[in-house]
Length: 293
Image (cartoon, rainbow, N blue to C red; front, side):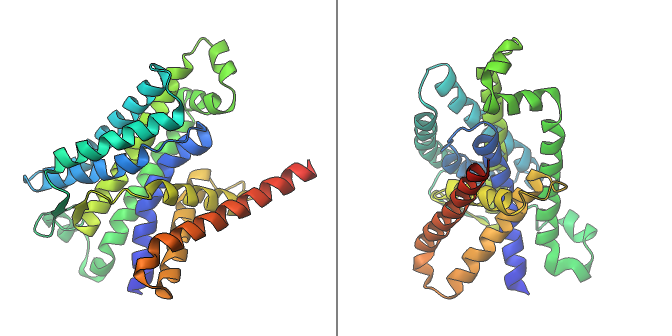
C-alpha cells in the first residue's frame, strides 16, 4: 500500500509541474527549459526560509512568485532581446543554477528538523489519527486540485483566451490590438510559478533540497502532458488539466514499476527510454489523424 501511496504523492507533485509545462508546451508552443532551473528554485527558497523559521505555508506563495519572476526573465530575454525561445530557456536555466546555490547557501540542505506543510501542529489537529498515514497524500491532492481549478478558471477568462490564441494564431491577437509578447511573458510567468511551487512541495515532502533535483524535470513534465493528453484525448468531458494530472501519476507509476525490476542506477536510462516510447506513440497517433484527414 505504501508503494501505491508513494506513487500517488510523487505523481501529483509532478502533476503540478506538468500543469506548468502544459501552458508552455501545449498552449504557447514554447520549448521552455527554464523548468529545470525553476523547479529547484522553489526548493531552494523553501530550504532557505524553513531553516530560518518561516511559516511553511508562506513558502508556497513565495516560491510561486519567485518562479513567476524567473518566467518573466525568460520572457523578457525572448521578447525584448529577440533571443530564440529555446536559447532563452537555456540561458535562464543556466543562470538559475548559480542563483539557487546563493539562495540555499549550499548544494544540499536537509530539512528533517523543520516544520513543513505536512508536519506541523495545525495538520496534527485537522487530520484525524485514522487518516494520519495518508496525511501527505491528502495535502498533496488538495494542493494539486487547487492549482488545477485555479488554472481552469483562469483559462476561461479573457486573458486566458488570449493566452490560448497566442499559441494557436498570434496574428489574431495582434489584430485585437494586444501585445503578443506581453501575453507570452504572462504565460511563462504562470508556468514557471507552478513549476517552482511543485519544487517547494517536493522539497518539503522529501525533507531535503539538492541542487540537481531539477535535472530531468522538463522530461518528466513533457512525458506527463503527452501521456495524459494522448490517452484521454477522446474523453471530451474530462478537462485537459485533469488528464495532465492523471498522466503524471501514470508516468510515475511506470517509472516506479520499471525501477523495481532494474538497478536504481538505471533510473535515468529507464526515464529516457520511457519518454522515447511515449513520444513514438504520440507521433504514431498524429500520423493516423493526418492520414484520416
